[in-house]
Amino acid sequence: MWHTTHLTVLTVLLIAAGLSTVVTYVAARRRSNPADLPGTGIPLLDAAFLAGGPGRVVDTVLVRMHQEGRVIVSRSGLVTVTSNTAYDEVEAALLVAAGDLRQRDLPGLRRAVMTSDAVQRIGDRLAAHGLMLDPALLRRARSARRLLWLVVLAIPVSTVVGSILAAGRGRGAREPARAGESTEKLEKH
Image 1: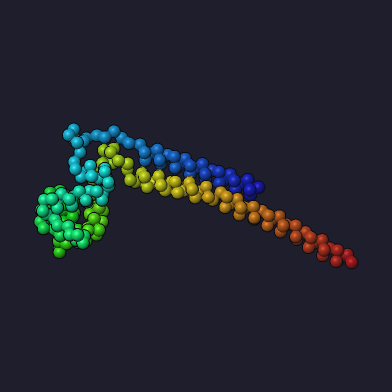
Image 2: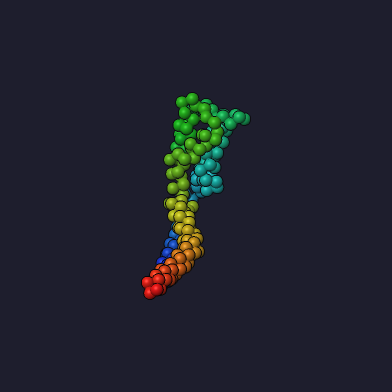
């Protein structure tokens, strides 16, 4: 009896996890038609985001500012800001990340600007226009996939545990009967 209930519950969990995974992946992969974009193309930083994500946006801003003489990048990886002029909000985020000393190591500066609200807004805007997948939906899809794998792995584990418990109950039920028989025989003698 327990074995049948056990398999029914696991089957229902497997079906539910599978359906959840499929529905989430379909929703994550669905792209709307790009809308409200200028007819002459997309802005430079939007193209950089599409080409390489937040890191490419920071690299593009650093190259642009370096070419204009507003930052200096040393061979050792130290970025020095030479001008406090920012032409967009990502450049402003870079200036803030450089700090009061107007210097910062390149890896730390990149991380700070990549996670800034200005760069995240570029990604959100591109997702809203249908040019990239929504990161929140992709995270949900990955979680659904992990849940499905967990259920799939739980089936053999719970089957083995159920078999061991059922075998233990079978032996345990016979042993008291034998013990009862031997005490009855002793009482008769």
